[in-house]
Image (cartoon, rainbow, N blue to C red; front, side):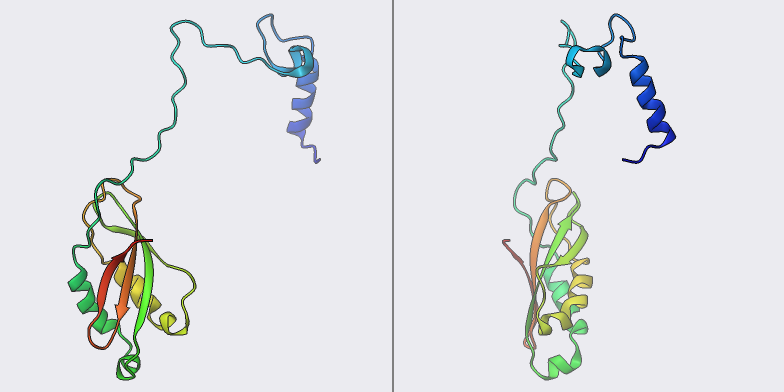
Length: 159
């Protein structure tokens, strides 16, 4: 253990109070066995506040601009993959704010070689998605972005 000047002063201060700071003191140095008692709340005192969890999203989240983003996917489709007829499904988890806008987007799992070629476009486009308000910030939604020569699709997928 490294002793800093503060730790040495604190140790000396505890040793100096071993006899008790004051009659009402409950510090560990003045309690038999060195364990401080936690006084029970007196009559009329309020209990400490209990931390509340964030409210759960209400209702079903709907994707509002899927067609627009699917059209924009066409421009993000690498031409050589389009010419080769390559199809790829990229799964992206998005976190929404209370208004249904994307706060963050991250790929699901490790993309394979083909999916990796579409990953940057998928993450960029995922940030443009708009959803119905989820009821609370922090709602998570999994989205499938299907790049295919015959037409792209964006759909919500249950995790």
